[in-house]
Image (cartoon, rainbow, N blue to C red; front, side, top):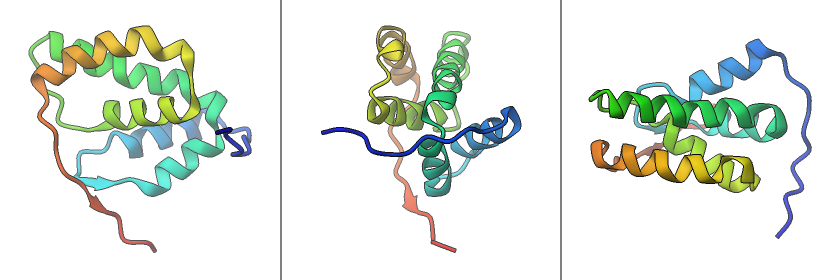
Length: 111
């Protein structure tokens, strides 16, 4: 299966806004942020990796993650087949999983 999503260029501010939406503290699937991330795949990958790394450090420091950005980041990195994230993400998510129970999400109402 090949990924046919067209990638466009975004500013740093736009990319940061996407990451902020992915990591917002709510239990709603951020569909618009997913769509925006898919439009900027190559540019967003380092920020997705950073979400996982930050959540890992927080878990190591004894702070339970209260947002789900790291989970969404893993999903998107897998979808993008971003192999540069594989090794670090596996170890990071194992650390986070110990401290973060699985939560359930409601689908976001389409506007």
